[in-house]
Amino acid sequence: MALSSRLAAAESRSRPRGGERGAAAAVLARGVVTSYLGLVVLIPLAALLWRSAASGYDRFVSTVTSPEVLASIQLTILLSLGTTALNALAGTLIAWVLVRDSFPGKRLVDSVIDLPFAIPTVVAGLTLLALYGPRSPIGVDVAYTKAGVGLALLFVTLPFVVRSVQPVLLEMDREVEEAAASLGASGAETFRRIVLPSLLPAILSGASLGFARSLGEFGAVVLISGNVPFRTEVVAVTIFGRVESGDVGGAAVISVVLLLLSGLVLLMTDGLRRWRLVCDG
Amino acid sequence: MSITVDRVSKRFERFQALKEVSLEVPSGSLTALLGPSGSGKSTLLRVIAGLETPDEGEVSIGGERVTHLPPQKRGVGFVFQHYAPFKHMTVWENVAFGLKVRRLPKPEIHRRVRELLELVQLEGWAKHYPSQLSGGQRQRMALARTLAVEPSVLLLDEPFGALDAQVRSDLRRWLRRLHDEIGVTTVLVTHDQEEAMEVADRIAVMHQGRIEQTGMPSEVYDHPESEFVMAFLGRVNRLGGALIRPHDVSILSRPTPGTREAMIERVVHLGFEVRVEMLLGDGSPLCAQLSRDEAAFLDLRQGRIVYVDVGAGRTFEPSQLHRAAS
Image (cartoon, rainbow over all chains, first blue to last red; front, side, top):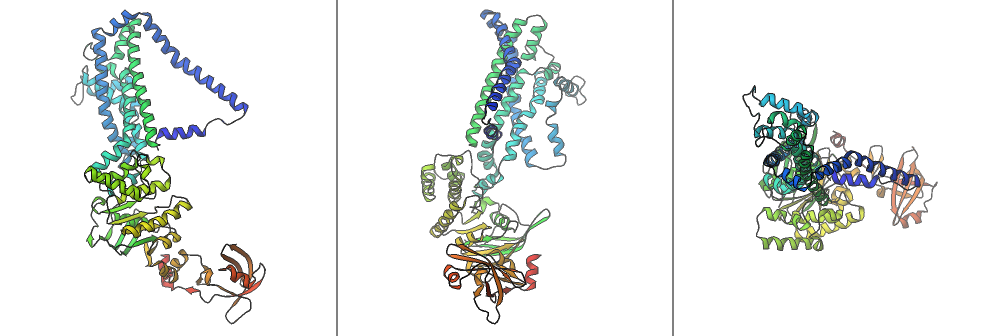
């Protein structure tokens, strides 16, 4: 049983029970949730949309299709896709090792996985610059290159896939693999036909969260990328640059594009979650 | 095919699960490994399947030594207590799994899966997922999946343990019929002595990593070789060092030489049989089982004094007691 179905079970358990006071409390709770969500998330988003719409259609199109913006959107999407694919692979492998292997220091490694979440992203960027910058102690200088940006994205999105695959692996019944083995399936076949299909929804949902994060990453990237237009400038930095130079309208327009992309990814993630629920039954 | 287990030992960290266990399973038989939890019965089954490697000893199937063969190459079918269904596959795909792995031609796979689903009475459920089946249906699907690869031996690990009583007894009878039909050598692990007596034609009683006794159900019940076997296979009264089954206690209205005085504490009517709970002169409890007619004839009532003959009680050699306890 995966997280989602456990959530569903918990939801049905925590359904409010009868009584007028219960009903009143439910209405109140719903009101608080809606206003909070509105205040913190929805109204600012609406303001952003309003702001970008205020520039008018022509301005919108010309901003989005300007070569510099197009280049930075393209770079961001390509790098995000690449790092997401790489982290999907590495993250699954790390989760596998953490769950199935036992070695000294395993718990330390397990907690290190969360470091990219825990430390401020600018600090992460600075760390990467110190290690892989012009004065690299190991002689690897990727500062101000696409590789550097990719590295920063890999760093900040590493935990997503690991943390979504790990619980699924933990809950996976070893007997299922033993059953496959006794039916004649080799280790590789068991992985491909039995283990991977069970992990795939978790891998994809972790990867899509990581992808959404990569699209908007600023702090970890800004130092190591050098922000060279057409070469290493990512969308988040482009937006920042527009605001800095007083073009708030332009910044809003680009933000809306970023927002649409993130929304799309979120929708996909949700679809995957439903799919997973069907599989788990 | 016959199975031979020769002096197999297996240790898990500090727990000695199997201690020099030897077992012969005749070809075509249905043998039950019976014992309480922790007696090593599941470990023995997993060693035969190749899911565990023994520390010492040898396992042979059909005369061929398989101790170091992986489970894939042993030709055994294994059925788990919790069915181990492939959740992302339909019933049809579950049953077809082993055949697909063997790269059988498609028409052949279709024919075989259809036959098997018919055999386990799941024809209408081919397109459903395991989560949509009941426990009993899931276990039948798991059995069909295992039988699909035509195993030379069938190993069942508490296959009905997670099912409720009615489904359990239905499936037991069904399994016995299935075994008579296809005749594959079967080893069944269970902690339920009734299940073992009902289904198996041979029983190996296990206790603390050893096999205490092997034989036909009537043999192990009527001629237990150790106190443990006698106590595990049915209810017993303990009188000092002797053990006696409730149905071997005779109740008389008048004293005769060798009988002991007892007072009836409770008379429990259980349909055809009647259970009489008594207290002996020295205060120790004694339970007797007799038929309804016998009880009526003796006019057994609470508070009455009767005379019991416990001469059929058995004592076991201390060496066996010691062995059972070690």
